[in-house]
Image 1 (cartoon, rainbow, N blue to C red):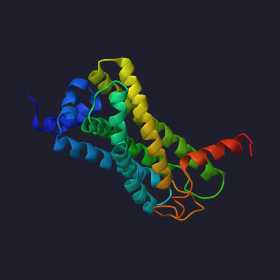
Image 2 (image 1 turned 135 degrees about the vertical axis):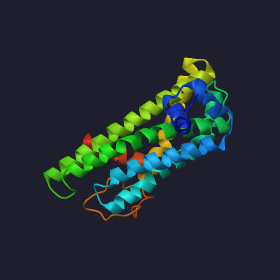
Image 3 (image 1 turned 45 degrees about the vertical axis):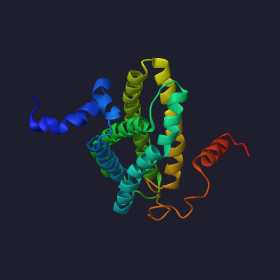
Length: 238
């Protein structure tokens, strides 16, 4: 018999363990409580991690990123739901719009819960590195913080997508179909998520620029143009 405290944590256990048989009802039935749980996991987990991410720049930056980080995840989920629902049947997996939305929402909820669990460690690291400023120590600290965020976010995303892959394999009954659908969904999420991140910058912040929620040139250029320009500069191609 499940104790009351255990019953309250059951949705979190089911989500993080990612067992397809336990999560199948989450996809098959439109349950407002489960949707609210996933939204709460994203808002709290990604919000806490965003606060830790922006805290090196200033308390204001921490508040801004605590709002923007969950916003990116939710906008990516909503924005790609229709695309993902169209891609799945084309690739051999018959999922409805509602089922596709819920699968992506659950995946991001898992990633956000993992990020939230890392937020105290990241905040502790930020507290102990040299403060933002000018000079080699500050630049080294910025590099360490950047690489740490890349590693933690990559770990959370990889774990969440492994859980999503298991669920897709359970629905399709075929590893190849599940893999194709997963890669197609990831491509769409990456395309939209990276551009949203570009528009909603800054996150860590820069000592030479003021603290602000959005840059004044937020809608100028795009993420892919910037990456291409950086690559051309690296290769010394004009």
